[in-house]
Length: 314
Image (cartoon, rainbow, N blue to C red; front, side, top):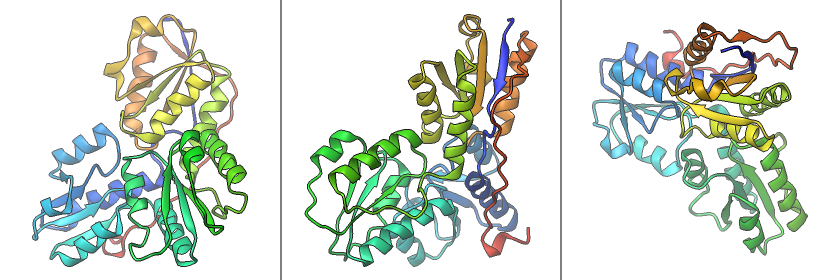
């Protein structure tokens, strides 16, 4: 293989993923009780498998967690109903929801208090979207609507002049801006957040990929199939006429396919561990690829989120 490799930066874990995994691992160290996590703590196969090997139990619903356990909510957030159920139980629980997702939850509650109907841009069925929809107060006289695409917006019938939008945090930046413009055209009085709901890590990873796509004819995205932000990176390449593949790890690579390309870009979704990136890179290097010296945008990230006070001293 005589190929050049160009590396996207930043890539891999974001602050919210780091925090969520840290909460689970520190809970394992501090407490004698079994640790249960509602849903996958982050959407990555290796992360989940590694935590399972350490003794973590992953469940779909709160009722599957015994009273003598430590419970943890995933980084994607939960509805108020799930949180209320946890409070009524006897177990200790920690909320590993990414603070940027919590920001969207608070926006939904604030708009409802102010009497505004809300449009949520997001993917139906995604855990983050389910949690955000579940933050709309049940006793509110306002409504919340989910839209995924232009067809959904065209079908929207909202009579209220008091209207706001929020978005899932892991969407395509460009596609989301396009949908926001469509909402603003149809509902001129609609208001949005003071800062974009798309999280900094999603934005930065998409910008990093954009910066190398002009150099590449193929892009490898490391991330699990259920990772929204990883899928958006693959889609971004395809929309720019660059072939791409989403892989869990190096075992998914097809060397015969890669031999048909000259310049290969590599990135990783925000829930993919750096070790997976290193393994893919080393695999390609040992098969004759060389790292490109091409100049491209590299964004420095220095964001971190604090842990619950009960776990900070560990």
